[in-house]
Amino acid sequence: MDSRLRSVGVLLAGGVGQRVGRDTPKQLIEVAGRTILEHSLAVFDAAPEIDEIVVLMTPGYGDRVREIVERGGYRKVAAIVDGGASRTESTWRAIQALGDEECNVLLHDAVRPLLEPRIITECVKALETSRAVDVAIPSSDTVLVAVPGPGGEVIGDVLDRAWLRRSQTPQCFRLSVIREAYERALADPGFAGRPATDDCGVVLRYLPDVPIRLVEGSERNIKVTHPDDLRVAELLLRLSAEDSGAGG
Image (cartoon, rainbow, N blue to C red; front, side, top):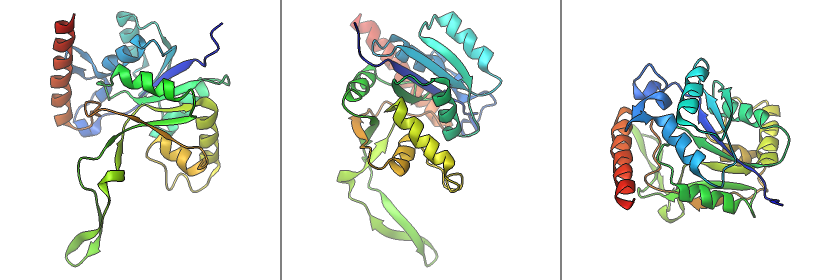
């Protein structure tokens, strides 16, 4: 009998894509022959560690996602849920949709279509011994702290790059952990005025005793946010397809 926890990939696709300059939600923009969402769906659907997929989609576009899922034969998609007005609201809706049974939850930005299967494997493996996991890469840039000064901003501090990481997704948790963190956040009157920018931030703030283990990410795991990102993603996805073809 397989006693391992089921692992659910949650694709957060609730954005509207204003910064990318399109009327269509950016996750539905076609890049390298299919939508950004479908590239991300394909990675999770093919991952042997993933048992189910839940998609949090921009309200009004659920039928389009259902068409994509049916056409692509993505058999692991268990639910398509309307996303919220913010990242935290979408995550909370996903938590509610997952029910009460304990599982591993991998929360991924759907607009990171270049996620490597290796990262999913390592995240699920890390969740065997950790209750919270983040994907991150070292910062190749020096990070400055800006402070007000004469004539504008000036450098207030230079941070030690050796300890700096750039967070990516998926961000991964035991369901009970991320649910408790969000329940505490939503009960905090001050949370709305100072929301966390990601899910690990919610756990760090409201469950500080839960260590968040780091898994190595990838420079290719880019988030499509601006118009230039579309061109970069197009190139990288086409190169990946060519490499796969050559390997086959």
